Image (cartoon, rainbow, N blue to C red; front, side, top):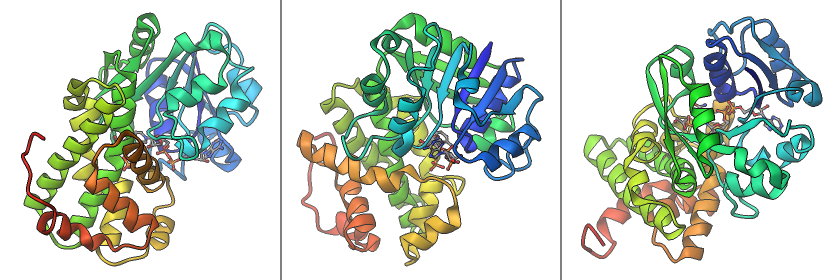
Length: 332
Ligand SMILES: NC(=O)C1=CN([C@@H]2O[C@H](COP(=O)(O)OP(=O)(O)OC[C@H]3O[C@@H](n4cnc5c(N)ncnc54)[C@H](O)[C@@H]3O)[C@@H](O)[C@H]2O)C=CC1
Ligand SMILES: O=C(CO)COP(=O)(O)O
């Protein structure tokens, strides 16, 4: 199988590694040509240092060359770059290729999910080939072959099963789903809740508070996903509670680290500069908050994270969510 990996950050590189363990030839493309040169030397020193990439993974700076005759195209760019990358790729994707987005986010300007962005940009003939991979999966652990399970959602079963088979290895196990909306909302919104969890830990709180934020975070994400037509059971799965727990409880999470820094009273810009990688929850707090308002869904944790990131409120106001909000029934 020949694969084009669009986006050579940590996630694209870990997935390229995974696909290459099956003998697939993977052409990695990115705007950062220094990263591509490093990949062709068999290590992504910028985004995934210490992992030796198989010989079949190559950095390719020319997009038409990267996409020529491929069987699978993977979009692994941050959500803010999805539209522009899809526009560049649209006429170059072979008509028979399967397509998978592994991005977790909602376009801020349009509030479109990645499936909506791709359907907006790509020719109609490609829509049935679209699939979406999400779930609890830190890039570095995938590249170290730690057993990992994810969800691959798609509206067309044949494509979903094809992409599921393509990604399956002895250490990487994808489950198939038809709930594209539920998987996409979950994958985006969990990053915002991870910022709240990091903030709580950064403020010196511990397990009780983290469990409360995870559980109430799941409740508000579920409300949004259901309002958008998602299946509530998806939120009990890998792309829901699985990814939420992972991201909310590990310093490996970039979103958690953003929150942790802010909980310690540091400035967002400083924490992000130190990170040097994308933390989707920072921009996606805007999209989640706006979608919640549009849908008339209450998401108090996400609203606070949004206000702390973008409206000058302090993240320590987290305490007020416990102290001041009216009491209510748990299952409301
Ligand atoms: N790193 C991880 O463990 C996981 C990440 N994801 C998701 O994968 C997506 C990508 O994240 P990462 O690889 O982690 O980010 P990253 O920060 O490690 O790398 C982002 C890459 O995208 C490239 N890029 C940015 N704008 C571009 C453009 N216009 N055209 C081409 N390339 C462009 C950058 O040059 C960089 O190589 C995000 O939505 C993230 O939430 C999902 C699961 C796991
Ligand atoms: O989505 C992820 C793991 O599933 C990665 O989370 P971070 O982007 O917070 O590092």
